[in-house]
Length: 211
Image 1 (cartoon, rainbow, N blue to C red):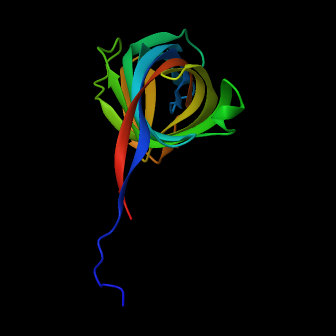
Image 2 (cartoon, helix red, strand yellow):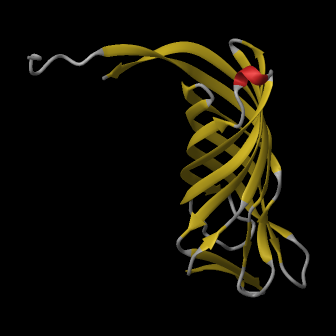
């Protein structure tokens, strides 16, 4: 008879830890206001990075952060555009990526990536009579790119993503001769996009798997 309570087997599985600094270009981010027209975040440079692990060949998870400093511009329907305030945008995303073909098929291979997390909008000093606050929103991301193998420790990553901050209360701006104001109601999704270049630095690691 087989002995009851036999100990489980333990094995070590290889996992590649990765650090990827990034720099890129971020655009989009428009919110209509009630009197017509809109407010719009100007396109500008962004930078950040990710820390991740290749959990299976061609599959990885990562925690990423990016930051963009730009101007929020008011665009009334019958008046000149004007700056509302400086705007800092922070994205924190937990994402998973998957290669679309085996890495052994060549030095460059496409991948898809998607994630969820949060977006923080940090306004600076306004140029109009508003009193804006830092605002945190749930957000999702979806994109793809190409990883190019330089050597066993370094990859280049060219990536584009759609960024989707989701506000379950909609912000509405209006401006007039008496000043400006902000109202809140409803819900909105404010789409942004980014294209980035990253340098992935890989370090060998291990995880313990129990059977």
